[in-house]
Amino acid sequence: MNLEQRVAALESLTTELASQAGAARTSARRWRATALVSGLALVAGVGVAANSSRQVADVITAESIEIVNADEDVVMELTSDSTGGILRIMNSDGDVVGQWEVYETGGYLSIRNPAEDELAIIRCDEFGGVFQVNNAEGGRAGSMEVDVAGGILTVRSNEDDQVGAMMDIIGSGGRVYLNNTEGEEREVKP
Image (cartoon, rainbow, N blue to C red):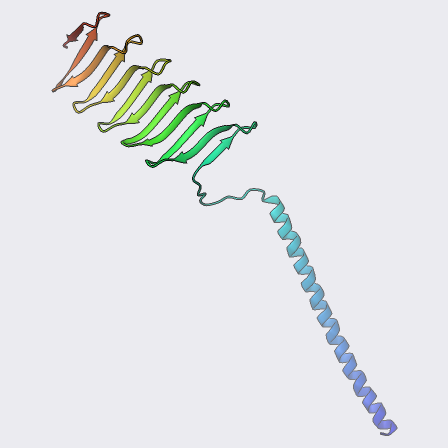
């Protein structure tokens, strides 16, 4: 190989190396831009994740859910039995003071004292709605309910659970019953 051929080969090699160096610079710029965009996306993703502290689920499935107070006492329970759902509300001592549940004939709402005696009840039976108020020991003191003929209002004695007064429907009219302290029944007709 003579001198001219060597110079031509060197020029050709220099041109090729310059071309490759230019391509390498372009490729390096692309990689640098890709790395910068990826880094910014990562920082943005971490920022968004750090700011969204709550996750919201569409549906939560559980057999029982308990809510506790600051002392970790269970104060509310959501559960079920074979009839359906039950919601119990407890005081901090664990006494059930309110309960709402599914009853065989519909809903059943019970408000209780800390001794868990039912003091007020709202429920459904086969005739319709029932509202019952009880004395402090849980004995029935008064009620409004429905039977086959219509509405009934009853007031009872705390001492012996005797009906003291009652209003109901019989036939196509109303009637009122009053009992005296000796248990003698007297019907008052309108």
